[in-house]
Image 1 (tube, rainbow, N blue to C red):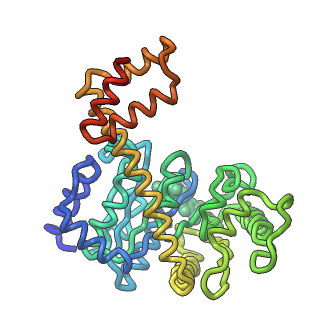
Image 2 (image 1 turned 180 degrees about the vertical axis):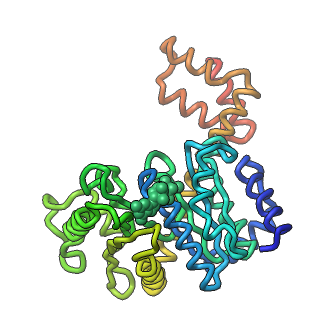
Length: 350
Ligand SMILES: Nc1nc2c(ncn2[C@@H]2O[C@H](COP(=O)(O)OP(=O)(O)O)[C@@H](O)[C@H]2O)c(=O)[nH]1
Ligand SMILES: [Mg+2]
């Protein structure tokens, strides 16, 4: 990407991050290209080598001719903050490449959080000709939950030396992994982590293409896994593979890249890609609507003195139940003028 185009892209992403709307024509153009684009999410604990791995994959994709964007999400560091310099350092292979665009995003500190901005940023990137997006998120907290609603494929990274091998299960992210990566294979203990992860996956997937395991022997997590990777059109099942790699030397990264391509091909062949995009859109729309409602509530407090204060006082005075007060606020927030006026009168207890 030429420097001028890069600069324009950076300005537009900043605007979207700040909650300002991007040009609808640009978003529409991006939306039209989104079905051709693939988004990979990489998540895992801090220090597990996500940035190093992202750098290696971005480089490999760019060398194969793809236009690649990297979105690095770090909740602890605002865009201009310090921690991101570490990531930049880890991105030194891909950073200089013409075909790679690297961008840090703050998970907080912009309107609506990661989930509000990411889909629009992906559409903007699509309109700029990007074919592949890599989103790196820290494997903890909100951004990690959100990655499953923002990526076509999620790779969960584990490493030896962070307690026992079941970190992913403990963090509750087993369910979102389409692929598992055990990084730092050059350090002792990587084999044990790989073994534990593989055993857990076999347990969760046992009998997946046969009859379901008895309800009492199956956990909620098992059922979610089955729903996510169960039989598609051709009855094919995706059993998430575990790849042991050394991101720093590149050992195993080629095989991991091939596995990611196999997952994309499997998803396409079994209509799972479209189904997943639909599920992602549902989740994103729910979130957008919630944010709209929150914004409207804030507006209402400005327009209407403070409707929240009045409803709270009525609840405390025993005039109405909390559920009725919440419904009154909901009505005022969403209703056309007359209904809003009626809800306002109710809030005043008249
Ligand atoms: N020994 C070893 N160190 C690694 C490997 N991959 C990454 N690292 C190091 O682990 C540290 C954290 O890596 P980074 O990519 O920033 O992790 P992130 O916080 O998950 O993005 C850095 O010092 C890396 O050089 C690996 O395969 N083996
Ligand atoms: Mg990182």
